Every structure is written in C-alpha cells, then in structure tokens.
Length: 299
Image (cartoon, rainbow, N blue to C red):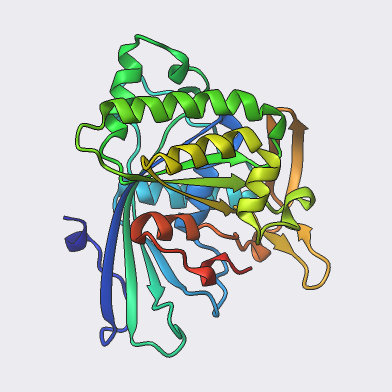
C-alpha cells in the first residue's frame, strides 16, 4: 500500500530495492522523540558522502514533522512535548520513505534501497505512567496498537543514567506486556537509542553504542540482553543526535542548553545553517532489514 504513494524524484535508471517497517517510538518525556522524527523528516544539510539520498514525507503527518522542523527547530525553538492521547486513533502516524544508495560501494552503485516506514511516537506519559497501571483500558489500547509493530525504538536521553532503575521497571512492564499479547510468537526487534549524543559526555563514545549503553544504563542493558537470550527477539544499540555538532577538529554541540537535571537535558538548535544530525537512520535501517549498515553510523 505504501509503495503507490511514494514517488521519489531520483534517477529513473536506478533499480529500487524495497523494505518496510511499522515502528513505535517509546521513551520518557525528555527523550526527544518528536525532535528526532522532525530532524529525520527534514534531513537538513545532508553530506554528499552520506548513504542517505533523501527523505520523503508520504502523508499529512509526515508533512507536519517537516513544518515542525522549519517553524520551530530552525528558529531556535523547542518542539512541544507530545501529549498523552486518550484515544490511540488520535496518535499521529508518520509515513516516510528513506532512500539510500546501495551500501556496497554505494557511490558507484546503480541500485537504491527504499525504507518505507510508518511510525508513531508515544507520549512520555505512556512510558512513565500508563505502563505502571495493572488494569487500565488505556494501557490495553496502547498495547493493542503496539502489537502489530515490527520494531520498537526505545529512546532514552543519554544523560539520564541516574534513572536507570526507574526506566528498567518500565522496560520490564513493556516486555512482559508484549510477550503476553503476542499470540503469533513474533520476534520483534528493539533498538535502544541513546539521544542527545552531541553532548561532550556522550560524543566521545558515539561509535561504541553498546559499550555506552551498558556503561550508562547497566540495568536496562541486562534486561534487554536477557530478553534476547531467551529468544524473545533481537536487540541492537544506537547513538543519535538530532542537532549534531559544529567544527572540524574541535567539536562543539550545535545546541544551546536550556535545562539540565536528573530528568535529562533540554536544548534548542544553535545554528540552523550548520544543522546536520547524526545517526538518525541507522536504527530504522536495522529494524527494517535486520542488518546493521556501518556507513550510517559514521559522522
């Protein structure tokens, strides 16, 4: 169904290879979920050497993301946090196509790879509050909406390591609920995505996401690894930055910090002309294909 609505303006001689995925983005209020999605849809100042050819919105919700990026992020303003929907049908469903040059010698290839995604980002209240309920219709509605997803992006502000135990409880609840409602025995892919990695205490280990996840969030890491060892699904680890950095030799976060505390970091974009996000496509590629593309993890 998605194929018919995507008409990318690229070389017609290129041979397309198509993958698709239904994603759910879950995380605390401060994780930057919608900012991540808006930066992805906007895909600003793309590097010519990047495997990503372009990102195209495919529905009104996808267009909404681009407007959020243009009207708020690029003007140095914050995107409003997603409010908890009392009806899951009200949650925006972002449809995007990500077009990549073929990863093997991509600069010379005449083949492109299309990632067609349908993605919802749940309000932070779902992760912090609703998941803690034991008998709640709203929780059941959200989980029923989550069951068809082929992959889950568990998004965490990389600076919130002091909330590791608290987050782990939410992860436990989510994993148990998904297992209990999955009558088809579907093996999901869960990408643990650390955000805000333009910050100095995270940037240095951006190319070691598994190490960084275990070092900063050892309890969550252990829970996810145990879930994977039991054969329930697959887990992979990623580092991202919606704002990126500036500088060639000495890197500086391309963000202005508004607040920093136990609950995370709140920032706005500093220089829109130098706005180049980092690592946004890598977890989506893995969820859609089951393989890691190391080119997407490069700066």
